[in-house]
Image (cartoon, rainbow, N blue to C red; front, side, top):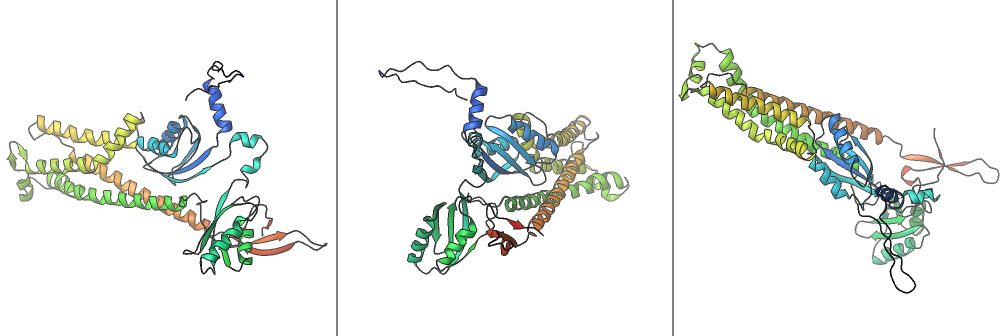
Length: 408
């Protein structure tokens, strides 16, 4: 990171000498207290176990500009707190992809800097930062309605900007939640003669990002389809391999005509079955093994560590190459384990497909629980003229900062 220097301009126009470079730890401290921190949620596909989680956390946690990182294996997501001036979201994705995983940004938002919080303005975290809220607006008929409503909203205290769309019958209001909430904005729009209701934007928060849970579920569905496709494609090699290596070569007696036909020498000293098994194993190594070789290469060369893909690549390659050496040295009569490489990949792909199915069901169950939250809430209004507190039923979407709610 470049050192911080300061120029002092004297009254006569001359420039004083540069201040000595500061200690790197001081610069890091300045970044943490002055620069605003960013929270980024990423989808990380390709993790198979806790070892993958630990590798990502240790690798990214040791990089400059990252203050904390939390990786969740079940949801295949990573939450990173970082400083955009040092580590951008694009660099985060590139770093994760360099380790052999697939990364995609789901959401990103700016948090308060420590300096702002230390000044006693903790409200930056609790509603003093602008937020975007969307509303459905019914009753607009022309551009005059749009102009009137836009002018009305922008004049409200606490409203930073307003964007009213006639075609979609929606309004996006950027406001400070501590000063004005969604319920008050809804009431203002309704008082102007329109029918308004806040829209449920999920985790959008005005950043234009989709709901992270929905994207995670969609990514897991995509991953499940890819895993299923790889598994069923592996069966195209595993089933013929089982027939030739297990049934014809081992189960059938030597006197069987089928066994004799496939044990016949056709190329130098190599039998028909050995040649077929060799081509099946070679096709498997090229088509299915390429996926494991790519991720193993990234893990070893870029991340400087070994993951599950490295073990699979080593095991299948050892069985494949060892069988070639054995059969070649012994003129086609040696022990061969071509089927081991094919069956190993098939079982691994089956396991990953089942894992993707289990993850998808888990996230779907969690989403179902989240959707079970009540649609309405009881708003407690302060007592007036000695009367008891007044309870008002409002929509859960209209809850705003500072409300007192009754919990049954």
